[in-house]
Image (cartoon, rainbow, N blue to C red):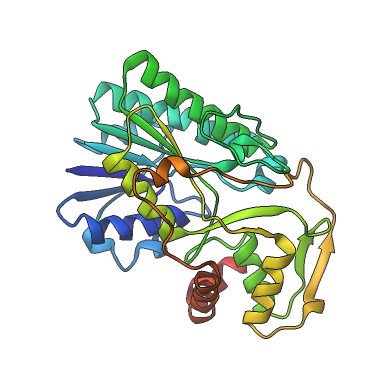
Amino acid sequence: MNILITGGAGFIGCNFVRYMLERHPEDEIIVLDKLTYAGLLENLQDVKDKITFFRGDICDGADLENMGDIDVIFNFAAETHVDRSIIGAGVFVKTDVLGTYTLLEYARKHDVKKYIQISTDEVYGSTEKSSFKENDLLDPSSPYSASKAGADLLVKAYHKTYDLPVMITRSSNNFGPYQYPEKLIPVLILNALQDAPLPIYGEGKNVRDWIYVLDNCEAIDLVFQKGKRGEIYNIGGGNERANLEIAGLILNELKKPKNLMKFVEDRPGHDFRYSLNCEKIKELGWLPRYNFKDALSYTVKWYVENEWWWKPLIK
């Protein structure tokens, strides 16, 4: 089976590539990545001889035609950082919406057997008390989450209109090795390592549900194997933590003082809390394997031991 993983040189994508190589050694893994700032060939250096890599843009149909025969598409390719989307939304609309449309057209014309769209819990918006289910209304707050919501709706429309065999996964905040140092956990780790201030938005009370990236990879694979076409599956770690608590755990892990935390002006439209109801994917037989604090400790250790990867990025 020929499996195309778009955005496979990014954070979640590169971890998924390794996961699939280990769990599905009989399949041909093809990676397509534009290699923008967060898509790095270094993320795949240890598996480069086991995959077929193409540098290309999911918005360019000609690039997709170079892939040859594809049986399955996992679309990880996206612009993902909320702060960047607030500064400039255009590239998010182009990559996340137009890119998804171009991939869906390719999948439709080439009779792709399965198309799995990788989405986010942010499409639901914020909630104070409840947990979102897959059929809840979408209420995105940022240009990033709006572009991902638009992509999800396109995917659903292609299933209803063309009977395209699609599935969507919506995961909570991922963390782990190879995460670009603009997201919360790597920013806090790297700043703490350099005794630099740890920026905390507002009062630090915003809550996110955290999932270790390999738990997400396993869930996505399970959806691929057992999921029902046309369906959406929430994937959450069940680890709801305030940003302030995350910063404290990282400082404790690195034995750094709490006074490194620095409160900064909150960002516009900052969602207070994300929370997912994951009963649907649990019915497929999935449960997260990794204890949150153990996984966070492992992640901190990875950044400590891999300066070669992150030092060039923060310059």
